[in-house]
Length: 239
Image (tube, rainbow, N blue to C red; front, side, top):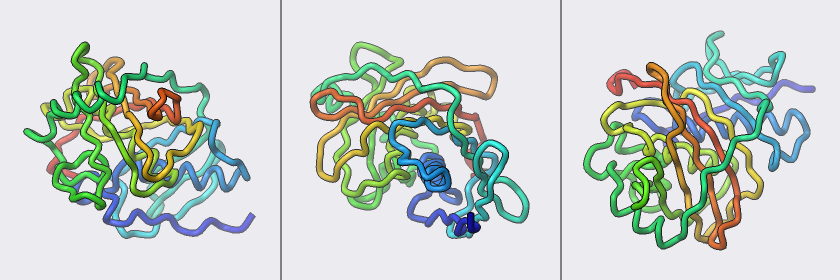
């Protein structure tokens, strides 16, 4: 098989100001893994581990590993992708109206470690970010939800959409964290202009690690994609 073309994370898809959005970067590498496996990707969960902050506008070498593929720069691994060992367990759905109500309580409007994040940054204008503002659902402090009407659709954007809602189910506004590992299964890619609900929940923690999950549902409550995450507490100034 010929060598893979370098992977580049355009600056538009940043999470922290100086590094790539974890979900978008993970999704871009997962898409490359599907291409290498000649796989249609939807329906097969993929795990991506981020080892370094993904640099922006910088070609990353994509090479095979024993279990999948890796993206690296100057011999240092930035991210690794492989087929997942287990399926992520979906977060229970909420209604479109409940998700719209939850958005009004999005904590990131008051305090956000990365306010220009591609997925959840309130500083992103319409059409330049996903603006998914997952807030607490009224009946549960551990469950967050938001509505999403995509203006553009791809595998990396779908991964990005299911990235940050997991963090906002936790205390990311008080304890900044970045994505360490993400496992995602896409059953059906979302469709531009259609209305969706994204839900997230926290599932535990251990030291600097926080475990969360998120799921994407269509207007009728059909599951489109689901993910699980491991987050790492960080000093935001270093990103």
